[in-house]
Length: 362
Image 1 (tube, rainbow, N blue to C red):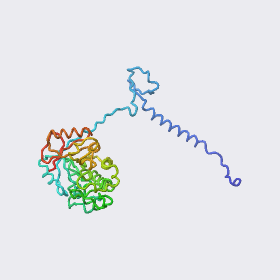
Image 2: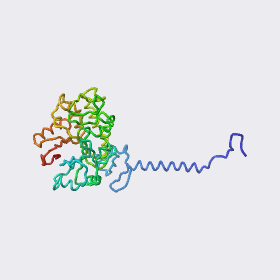
Image 3: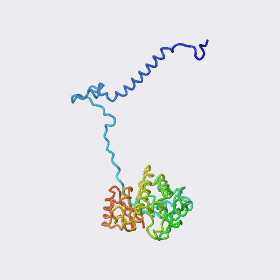
Image 4: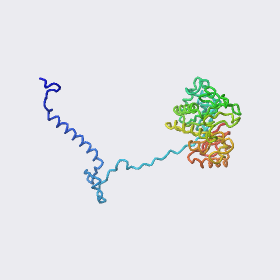
């Protein structure tokens, strides 16, 4: 029979054995935790008998007692040695889609003369030699078998693969998306430099992201190194006709800041990949002094050795191979970044010195 309205009938308390079972379960759990906690304090004497050696009771333990305390987690000291950077003896492959890796490499590196291949992924004429969704369709130049040949190169464990990407000098992408990527003149049209070249605008996010997407695609594909070229603003022609956009305020430092921002973005995007980041810089940049040269191409290019070198694993620079010249370049580079390797780019085959990195690019 139901009780008064709004209340249920009283059925009494639950069985006592359920309460007892719950208490026992809690005690078992606490006991297990205590055993786990005390395991690190278990030591063995000379007779292999276990005993507890709690820290608060072992401070005055005499030496030679035969007990060996167990190290606390985290007490171990490890020395991690950074892998030594290997030198590369590189040769540039012919610019164009790769069709037969073994045949091309045999011609470029007869008898295994070199151990690194530089493949042009994006040339300064704006053409792209890999399948890329980021590139304008009109810029992509691949042929049947080029993807397979590129895969053969990347799977060749005897060859260190370098992806060369020409960055802001680009007549194709700049014209394909002038508003989002291209460098304009003050009249609002595409800018042509003194060599009739068109450029991407480093200040535009679309231009920077296009290049970052290309580089990360190369890293994901298995290239060992990304070599950037043409990382600058135009340096010849009617530069006063360039529409620098937001960078027009604070020239020339604003140009340098824009280039540095791009390289910082690139480095961050590649951080998750096992790939080196390098750049080709003009020799005259090594002759400048101070954060930015007051005159010359460095003042208008946005390039500063002091800013760029610390972000790079390697800096490539055209050189004659003369020992004195190379020593001077290395000394200048070491002043701004001791961890960045100098790689001379030589027009003629032949190592400038034994055991040093170099690139042969006729």
